Amino acid sequence: MHPMLNIAVKAARRAGSIINRATRNLDVVAVKEKAANDFVSEVDREAEQAIIKTLREAYPDHAILAEESGASGHSDYQWIIDPLDGTTNFIHGFPQYAVAIALAHKEVVTQAVVYDPGRNDLYTASRGHGAYLNDHRIRVSKRTSLKSSLIGTGFPFRHLEHLDAYLAMLRDMMEHCAGVRRAGSAALDLAYVAGGRLDGFWEIGLSKWDIAAGALLISEAGGLVGDLQGEQAHMQSGNVVAGSPKIFVQLLKAIEPHLTPALKRG
Image (cartoon, rainbow, N blue to C red; front, top):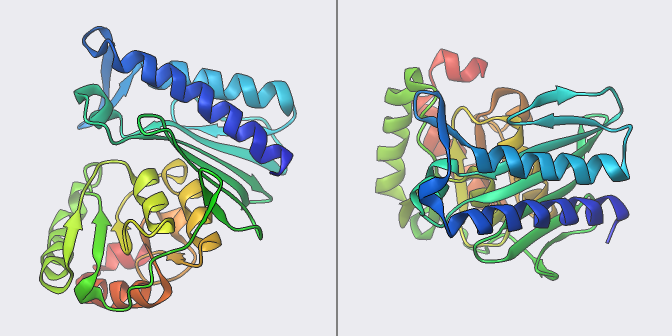
């Protein structure tokens, strides 16, 4: 394992143990609403601090972009961190959430970890070296038609101005695929695409820390990731389509009729 990936795994496991400990006593976890339907718990903050401390001990000069504490430092290396993706699930005891850590070098993601602490599932990837789940090599699914595919998504809870366009996409998808799942943690959904548990995924209005780790997992597992038009602007726009190569193309085709000018601009 690449030494930088090794440190990221160590950081993710430390955050995971904080999250697991808190699940045993959820009724005392303090929660604040950052914006409409966007929650942060003291556990997010504690997990993020543990991650940053672990990364800083190993790489004091690296820059950091973290969901709760923002951006700090100047370096060609930047760690992109979501300490608890799926906070709303977590605070309800719904066991679908993950820790996501990615390392970008000159804005190209080179290392990725998505850790599901509830199941102790560790997804890892280093650029050019494949993607793994618990040390077993993973590949995207072999399904070739949208009709037989299970597709993940997320509702645009922060960007309600896109709701009508999204609902039109969802309606079409429900008619043309085997099933749609909305599990509530984009980082974990993307990891599921990499491991073939989902055949594809799309969502509007994500943040860099939701996308960075999962996108590398997918490309290292033989899949494709892009924005709603298939371009490589998903990290900037936050609009993501992902899947095995054949399903990726079919997803773009299903989404295309519902793209508004605002969504085309990203």
